[in-house]
Length: 225
Image (cartoon, rainbow, N blue to C red; front, side, top):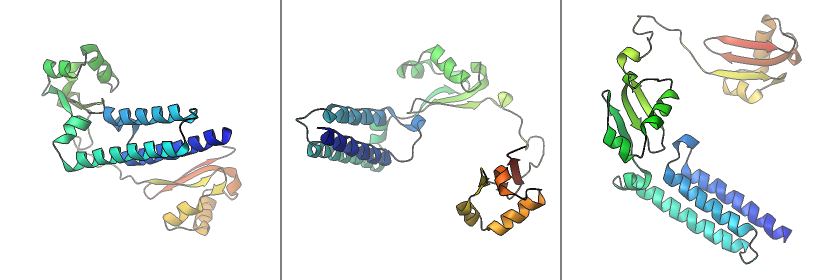
């Protein structure tokens, strides 16, 4: 009994990982209602079958394989046939256009005014007059473009040339050298030790955190500092 349940759980876990891979590298906020539905259905299938003695591991494999194939086919249809995308995945809806709230679109998407205000507040917007465009995405998120007068001042507006930035790399983590990261940036341990020595760190075990970037150099945090 325990062996069967163990096998079912292992198979179910592998299946869920495969389905997540089919979805692609999406954040949870990017998953559409359709994506969520077939994940929930798959979870329901696994939940019902794990403790059911009449359902074998092969039955689970068949159900998962069939479900995965159907998902794959639907994903292909959505990618190949543009007209099917709105039907299966939904489409963006412009709630605010050029500062004007579209009440029909609001009602069509079953969105109340206070819900819209809540979504705006979550983006730091406390009045509709600050909004030029607002688009309700298929995932349920609200994308907002602020009015020009409400937009923050940029360096370009002030004719300021900002300092260039670049990625930073963690080279020492709790006293341990990150060899793979060093190799990735084309440096070696000798270079790292020499750079840290110049900053007064002779013993790497005394370093809790050390990152490096091309534009800003090192940021080091010692254990006792």
